[in-house]
Amino acid sequence: MTFQQIRPQKGSEIVLQQIKMQIETGTYAPGSKLPTVVELAASFQVGRSTVREALSGLKAMGWVDIRHGGGTFVTNPLPIDSSSLFDQGQTLQEVQEVRRFIEAGCASLAASRRTEGNLTALRQILSTMEASLENEEESEQADIRFHLEIAKASHNSLMIGMMESLTERLQQSMKASRRLWFFAERASAEKLLQEHRDIVDAIETKDEQLAAEKMSQHIHKVDQVIQKLAKISTDKF
Image 1: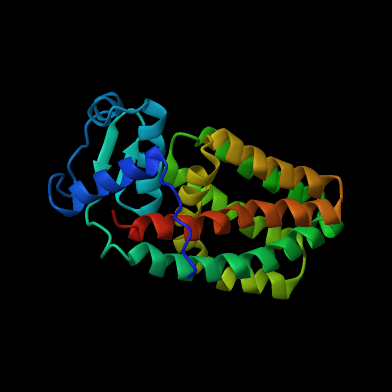
Image 2: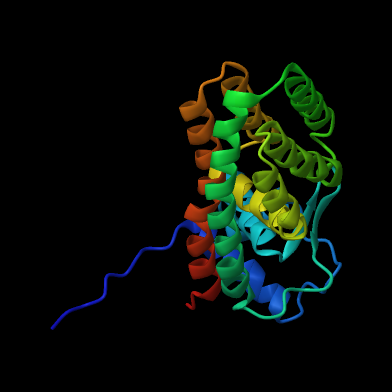
């Protein structure tokens, strides 16, 4: 007889599931504020880092909004159902696959063909990103402009056209992919900014292979966590 391997749950996954269940059952209503990290840590008898990881996962799934200096709030409206992340994950994964191939090619061509004007535009966007680290909406818009600008730096009209045709999908996926990136990396906005800088540095030094690799790695990180979060979202105790 073959037995299915049982993966032990991490403390953060258990906390995530418990908070998610309290949201689903109405203990915490849409738009309401959750207890502080300190209060949740004391309630669950776990460390604050465990609670923060759980809240990051819930944010990536779309269940909560974490406001800088303002606390954590239940999203309003809530996700459609418990399987919505899986459905969204499938769509997001498809967009990510297309992005990885197109944008790696754009980065490689940009490294070969970029002009000083292209570099200036990219550096200006990086400056905007740095100035918007605490403003999620502005940071997301700068992120989208960054990827479109790299396509322009490829000086390939078909590449530019494909990226522009993906703009709507890109806007929809960028917010989700950024949330997933932060959850997967457990890192700060500064580290995400550094990844963008690394891509521009490779383009500036005209290293086509490195530019493509940095872009591909940058996008691929999100793919690695989509299925993990979908699994957590549908796990039952």
